[in-house]
Figure 1 (cartoon, rainbow, N blue to C red):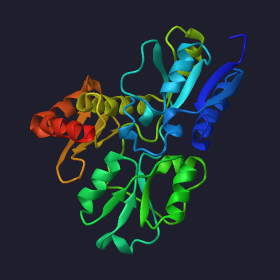
Figure 2 (tube, rainbow, N blue to C red):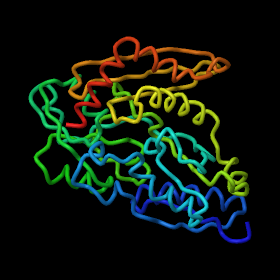
Figure 3 (cartoon, rainbow, N blue to C red):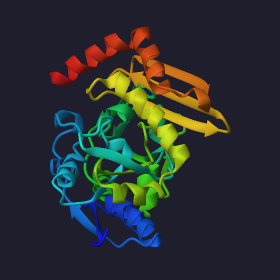
Figure 4 (cartoon, rainbow, N blue to C red):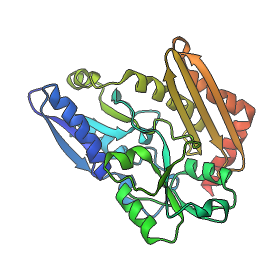
Length: 304
């Protein structure tokens, strides 16, 4: 490519960190690059929970349009924000090695765990899992970039807020008063970064292929297949985590009601040689156990 590779990214501190990481890796391979930051819909509309926006890919759509219009050559995303079905003309070109997949609780002291409490999160998945474990608690919506959410926790009378560990670690904002939530199943592909490009951009596809981490790619595909099969285009409290140990893939998946009272969970192992649609198969088991009826209920509740 005769001109620099144009890297599209959201303009939050975390997104810029991620895009800069990709830029440095490409430059180390001899490619000239430039960053082109934009504001996404999910960054601009902060007075509503994400599920109320009614847009698939609120954090990716603006960059998708720029990519299809030829204004950028590739885009870097937090993989958990990317819809399971990419727009026509856009392809996954690389999945970088996964960071910390866990959720963490940033708190003002843990005394509240065994009594009434108020926990902030903008995620249906985190809310449902928290209420399932702590039914005496209440949750409140929390939106904005990482810096904004930490400041809101500091200035509001909340006991705690839930964050993705990877995001806070990447920009050096992990507070001392945090607790990893080892029991909470993360969002599919949480902690991973995806780079997409135009399906006809062979130069970018070739350059990005060298950045792909095979193990992360395998695990996140299983998680996203699980999500795609369950959700049917609807936001829902869904968690998934696949891990590789030698030739064995271990998978945990979960679907909960919005209030956390109803839960379907699956734990399975499979050989890496038998992964064909494994995530979809796991999701189908949950649907047949009663998950299909629960998804119908969730869709109706979110429309109210």
